Image (cartoon, rainbow, N blue to C red; front, side):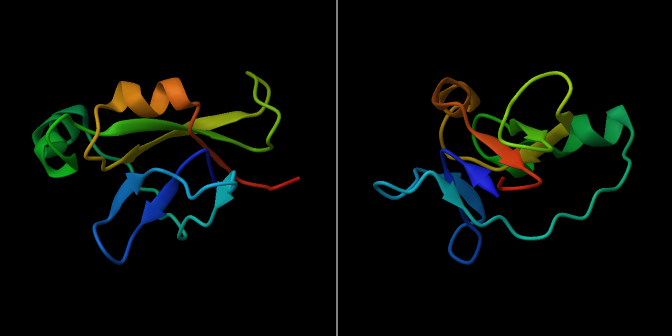
Length: 95
């Protein structure tokens, strides 16, 4: 679940503004794999003009160090700070 934004997977594959009065939106299943720092640095241009948004992933909607899992690199057309200021985060559970 993506909170405070939505994923436009079929049209552009980027994070975009959430619809009015919609706090949570569906996020597709994510496959995690390890990459080296060098490979991640090479792929920064694939994420948009400003680089990826490092979206925090939490187990539950209650945010904090105890519920933090990892970060997720998401493509965006806005500057990553835009999404940070909006409080965008991915959640593993909706309750």
